[in-house]
Amino acid sequence: MSGLRSPGGGADTTRVTAPRRAGSLLPRPFEADLEREFQVVRNASRSRWFVPTALLGLVFLDLYVLIDLVLAPQVLALSLGLRLGLVTPVTLVGLWLRGRRIASCPGSRVDVPLVAGAASLVVAVIAVVQHSAPDALGGAYFAGALIVVVFFSTLLRNDVRGASVVLATMVAAFGWGQWYVGSDPVAIQATALLAAAVSGLFGLVLAGTLEESERARFLAEHRERRLAAEREELIAALAQAAVRDELTGLLNRRGLHDRVGAHPRTAGRSGVLLVDVDHFKELNDRFGHLEGDRCLRLVAQALAAASRPTDVVARFGGEEFVVVLDVEGRAGVDPGEDDVQVAGDRLRTAVRDLGLPHPRGGVVTVSVGAARGPWEHALAGADEAVYAAKALGRDAVVLAGATLVQPAAQPVAGATA
Image (cartoon, rainbow, N blue to C red):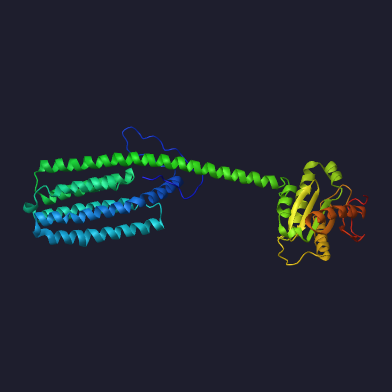
């Protein structure tokens, strides 16, 4: 039998199958979620051989009619009618319904009633044919039903619990068939019934051994898949941490260069804004590092909220942030000077509107340097423009090559450079 493989991972509900209790054939099931997954995997593996085996058994059952032709031609019509007109179509319909059921419920235990019903039907057909011509067929004819017990117990084995149900059903059908035929003494009937039960018991032992092996293999593969998934998640998390700023959650400098520097659009005209928090060192020293960290997180959130989905926002280092406009180029045109200026003022206003208190009085503000051009050149130009914005008194937006001064009526955190 091929190895059991799960279609996917799952929650960590793994529990090692407990050893069998002394004198017990029953492997203990997993916890509920893992048990359902096991049944799905087992059904998928079982289906690869169950249907061909069942069809092969059906062919041999139908060929059994040749014995009727030789021993008792008078029951040939009855035998053909029961085998080809009843057992064959019922079995084919049962296999079709099995496929439908497993398709809709992959973990279904439909095989238990299907196998038990089919076994009972076959035993009943043999008993009816034997009963119709006991003298011509002889008392040994019904003994062929013992082969049915072996076939369903071994070749069409189920899990050990299902196999127990199937065996009990088959033994009951076999006992009824002996009583119905009535051609053997009671002692012989009892011996034959015992032989059927013992044969089925061997099937139970086989089913229990194979099920325990299947469960152990499934559990090992489940753990291997889970560990592989955890490794992949860890690798992804480490890769993400390498390009993300831990404090703000924005891209860090490496992530910025990976994201923007590798994009073909940024080799042309890029709009770059360098944002510097005004007098941040004084705020950090006066209010403490926790408040300074909180300020940076809130500024980062404000910059991200004031940017478009196609913009890239990153923490460049310390209290500096970078915003690259429309990296994906969805706007359809390169950002012009007006676009860069408007974007810079939108970022400046978003930070001012936070209303974060500054130790110099007023609120926390930012100085914004803006530039256009190829990515690396624009970043250098924006860096120079930031110093120009600080020289103007901060809380200002300066476009490389042109100076924009904010209205003097606005309160500015820290009036000196």
